[in-house]
Image 1 (cartoon, rainbow, N blue to C red):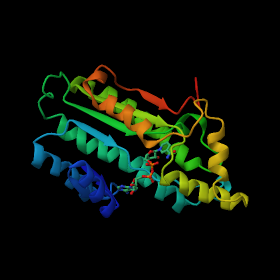
Image 2: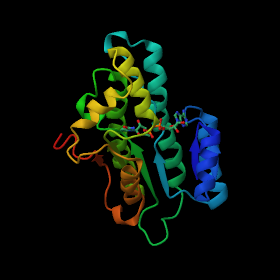
Image 3: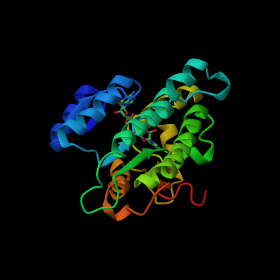
Image 4: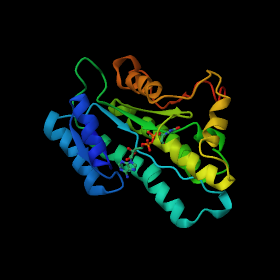
Length: 230
Ligand SMILES: NC(=O)c1ccc[n+]([C@@H]2O[C@H](COP(=O)([O-])OP(=O)(O)OC[C@H]3O[C@@H](n4cnc5c(N)ncnc54)[C@H](O)[C@@H]3O)[C@@H](O)[C@H]2O)c1
């Protein structure tokens, strides 16, 4: 089951994958409840949550407003927590997954920005992602007795519409031509190319699979070596 704010996009992808689509806003309580409820009504259970929605904004630290802060934190932090909580509240009452000792798996999307303090233009984004790592670990501790795991991924510089937005914000501020921020940011990636969504998907598939059943409370960098050792 796939959910996204963008109804037509989620319908299209779910159609391609032969899956169920739900248009929903993770910042809206009723939508969170509807997403979780739909899974339980259809399958009677929810094995894996991939809590991935996020937004970005590039703006100098000294110019960030309270509205900027609230808008970003509402999606990247508040919603991540309440989606996790809604899923965990139901998972805790279900039987373990067939052939597994686990009841469920929670996977959040943080970022390498969680560790690096982010870029100078993304103070609120970096703070939100550090908080996602924190929530992931607390959830792992709180839910381990119920045999629910919680891990997060920390992607690097991935070629998606989010980076197109950051490049637009950043190049406008610097007076550069479009694409220059992306080029500069991807130039030093040790594995020699920008990250693709498929690179991230491989790690998420592993975390969703039985191969990672003994893993919990971890934040895993998937970044082509960009922040080795931090
Ligand atoms: N692109 C990168 O370089 C990068 C790096 C590290 C982490 N991330 C994280 O990866 C995740 C996915 O980002 P992406 O690069 O695919 O960005 P994206 O902008 O391409 O996709 C984000 C998706 O989230 C959806 N969304 C936004 N607000 C929502 C809401 N309120 N309710 C429901 N859906 C909502 C959007 O419609 C969009 O489909 C985000 O959490 C992002 O912070 C991205």
